Image 1 (spheres, rainbow, N blue to C red):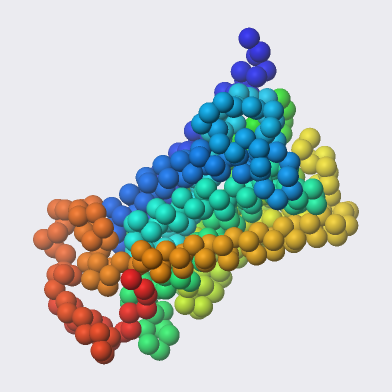
Image 2 (spheres, rainbow, N blue to C red):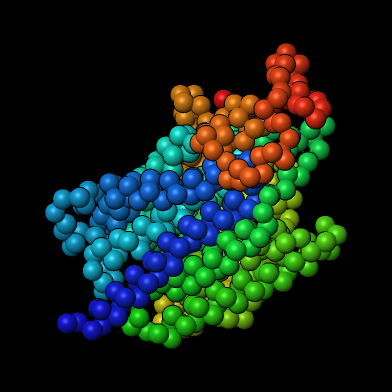
Length: 450
């Protein structure tokens, strides 16, 4: 028995389990930040999205991502449900084929899950399923090939160790496209453009989800070594990952306290996630001190990004675009600034702040622009296609009563039903775009598409 291979395989599969467990973290964060009437829908989407993404990655995505060294797209061994020729794939870790596949699969599932929260509380279940399938079958694997599969961005020197761009920015751009095409939730913005906060129903659930995600990140980042041949590297990545997270917790808490008047727990949760996203690209390339700085800045950025998206009338119920898109971009840029040659055996370049020239930063900028130029238009096309065919938004009646009833026929908290207001008792006046509810009249346009 090859002991080295056995240890590496155990590590990769353990890390994959931790990343898989992040599905529960995303489900509980999103459910906590949503209203109780949409809780079943959120939980169900987080179930179905992993199944759908697994199928897409199995059918074609893996081959597009790792099938040979064509600079644009994988062209070899595209379908792996028959005989497998491992020699055609560019991922060459010293573990069995299916261990490689499973580890990459859970990353693919994470990218799709990011979209779920951003489009929450108004997207049609079937349309979300179909978009997730297209994202993981086609969009995510192509970007993954460019960066991790031997494609042209990796050849240009672009560096993204664990996925600030490949996973988080891709999911973030896809989420932003969905937010744009869907429009905001009913009641989020009034006719004068004023923002009305829509608080989530269970901050306890969201906090539990945050800690699950934080734990999962110790598989996400250190596991990307796909090897235990150098335990020092793995330990370093653990440390940079955690250090960025704790710095972002502190800065997001104090910045929200200073600018919003209170230390908002929702901002702290998203701050921690922002620190984790931002360090993901450079966790193997930067020092612990640099990780502290990166996380501290990420915690500030996420607070103002949430405010910015609200100001632009882009309604993201959980802040996914602020966390994953904005800080995915920021973290990718940080490699160009903070990379330190020799900080691990995986780091071979210096960033601009540590004696390097502009070449690495330039490669990072090119990668960010190229990924945006591909993922955003492609995602917009898929969302618009779904809008013109199946429709992507539930009816206004379903949105007001809750997607749990409209989409699933049940509710998360049936014992509370007798105490809830009569959401179903309303009449729509389409000519004046008024919605009459038992408790009063909301004089707002319904911004969305069915």
